[in-house]
Length: 480
Image 1 (cartoon, rainbow, N blue to C red):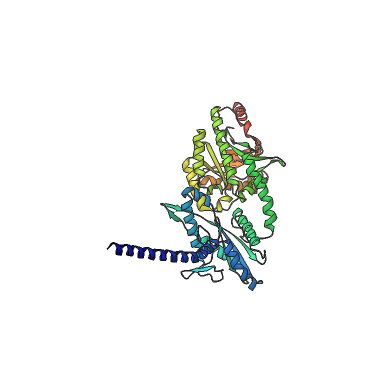
Image 2 (tube, one colour):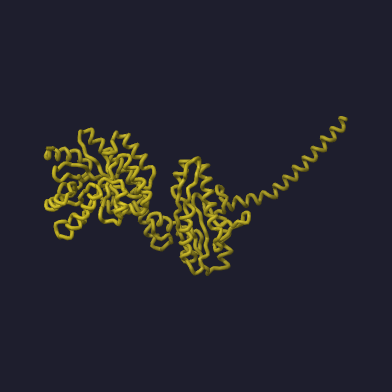
């Protein structure tokens, strides 16, 4: 009986060894295929990578060197915020889902390079790494098809994703380069598509197609913006201030801060030299953060000296697209023990039109926080009255282009009067900007405008001198 048991055990052992050897042989045979798969696919999404892209393109371009193709580059915007919110593992899952969504939208596009098939479904998107994806489109004699397809993807792919009860929003930026017009090398085509994508991010609504002008344009602007980022960190920026007056009582109601840049080589730069560029190239938000902190710190400093004045800060519509703006303001108010009502934020009428729904939502939140909101450059934009009624603003600032020539012609007088009447009919306070003389002030008062700023009261001066100036002004113009 024991001998039978030993023989049975030996037989089972032999069978196990034979099976193990067979499995090892099969594993060795499969290993090269597995290694080959990982070398050609992205680790996070599982979609073909840049190496697979290059390998697939070579025979196509050899067969059709004269054919017209478009390289469409897609980038997921603000993915760092998703990473910080959800962590790497969850954000990687989201990235894989975005890749799948892009690929699903391309299922019916037969003119796109197909890398492989999975369960009879074509794989047509390349994951270049990070948050960048690429598509290779045969445009034939219709290059406009590339922009059309890119816009379709931008509109249909970014649908909110629910993760742990949170709705995650994202957007896609796009850049396009053409073969062979822009290059015949994939790396150069990618570089040019990246330049087009950056240009698209800086100028919303601009073409997403590469053009030769972008090379120099980008290099110069990138250099200046790199210097501006450094200027923010190294205190090269300085704030000037211009008071806002009650024209009858001569009381200082607020003071608008205006940023200047003490450039090491170029000297003192006015806002016109860099603010529009900072907004265009995505540097405006860190600049606004710097200005807001110094403005709120100034309010606290004035209170400590028994001086009172609201401080007004100009912000960009792009600042209003940052959801963290509210949190940062609340932290600053708590840090410096300042009430939100002591801060005024001025937003240009023209800038609100780019993304009215998102900017309106942020302005509502700022209003609920208690911050006074001012619509700057009133009368120069194209807002409808219905839209203006919805804005949670307390004041409009009449643009200086109307005010400075107020006393010269009846036309300027009539236009300015109409703007002031319209604002008052909407229940809004009016601030006249650019008052430079007694005659203009007198006419504004007769039209029912009581608040103004301009050279007639004070030129802009260094913010550090504001407490002393305010104390002297109040001494010369006491209440009552």
